[in-house]
Amino acid sequence: DQQVKQNSPSLSVQEGRISILNCDYTNSMFDYFLWYKKYPAEGPTFLISISSIKDKNEDGRFTVFLNKSAKHLSLHIVPSQPGDSAVYFCASTHQGGSEKLVFGKGMKLTVNP
Amino acid sequence: KAGVTQTPRYLIKTRGQQVTLSCSPISGHRSVSWYQQTPGQGLQFLFEYFSETQRNKGNFPGRFSGRQFSNSRSEMNVSTLELGDSALYLCASSSGLGSYNEQFFGPGTRLTVL
Image (cartoon, rainbow over all chains, first blue to last red; front, top):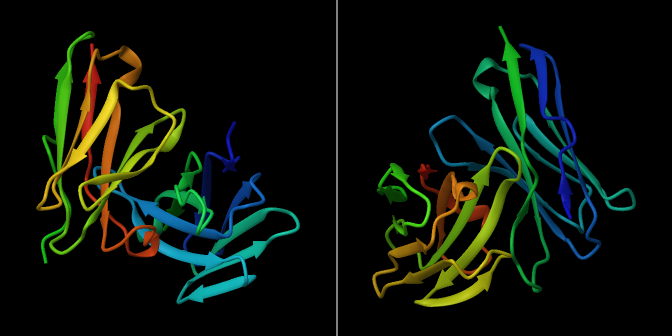
């Protein structure tokens, strides 16, 4: 059973526009959410996170929104740059619980110049 | 500071063989986690070690095992390899248990089982 779902396998946007990456989760115990970015031949790198006590967290061009009632989070990248082209993984965990990180399958973002 | 290193980077084995992968964490990091990445399943958690003890385990068969040494280096072992074990195996280190926003990944070991 996929507890973290990234239903769109890919997204293509123009440079300068907004990229919106979506993620849904099913486990109501999850209370900490993270986004990772992965380039080919490299391991994932941590991008941004959000705790369930917040509904928004911003870091430069990256903003993560959390809608707990819908069990949905999204990552906004504004403005998108060609260097943002990568695979993005959403991950969730229950802090204080099992604390295992559960990842989505990833979504490939392509930013066209 | 050197990053997380994994050896070997690429490996080809045949069904039924066993394999050992190695991970050296960032200096000072005591937590090491292992993940399997496949196109169909994304990243799946295998296990986490902290201070030489397995603290967490994912839903993988007993053929997958690991250990951590006193210098925090970790190895994972897969016995009786199956075709479905072909994947990218990623290791990640952090200073403490559950410190995911401070978790750094290595480049992975690409295992191909023929």
